[in-house]
Length: 351
Image (cartoon, rainbow, N blue to C red; front, side, top):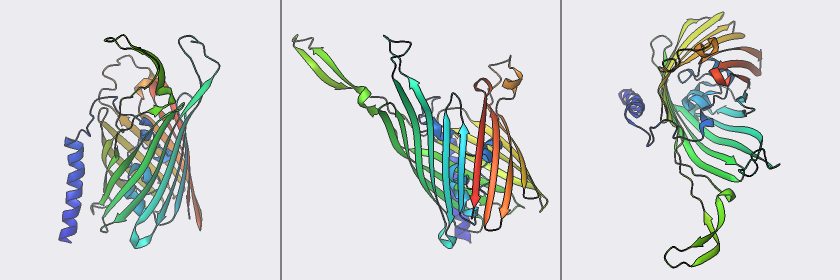
């Protein structure tokens, strides 16, 4: 028991140390790429403002905190759809499997598509008549296990790829997560480091050119010289999250939960997330969440009502229990001020 307590303490200290001292190589605003990895994949979590690192009681945990999938006793499927800005759509699929004492396993796949866009050039600013497309993809595998009756650990390995026209960039990343049942009533603590990995760099035919080169020293001209433009490597949008969740009411008729979370990204400012969920008779759920940025309003004194509600999210869900098959249908809406509202729909199946 003593050794287990030491293991838990060391793990939590390491996660807090990463958030406090590490800059993940890049620490400047806007320097990370593959930002689609930070788009929430399910309606329940986004309705709660993303404050779910300590919840881990549905299949979406494979995305938010891989340690949470150990709490799922059945096999689960999650199908999510996000209507993002400017005709951008994000589809997500996850599967988790409980393997008993051997732990839990999961796989995930996400695809973001931007549709067809018109090609424009300096000579043809109104368009050349040709179109191109861009898409992002992530595929990953997760393993999680309970080390004690209170402490669990999870790890996800994933392959990420971005494509635009015939150029692409790809790399590998990992998520590391822990969850701890404190033993103080039902207070839970969760910590996760997401999207930690190598750098990516775009390559492709659009970077290959043919030029005529004249040596300034000899005057020798080389026609049709093939060159390749090198693009700047970029980091993944790594972030550290630590949060807690507590059930103020936990009965068969009603479960009322609040959650609080702090996040430290490698390419932006820290944020605080807060979520509330009320589940009535294990059938119907209503949710409210808020993402707070400390300088969100300081630089914008003349906000509209929608601007003043930036970061606010809400949603609802239904749970249908058909004995061997359990179904969850969830919806959320989130306010992004000038960019508008983002809608998500998620279907969850347990069997």
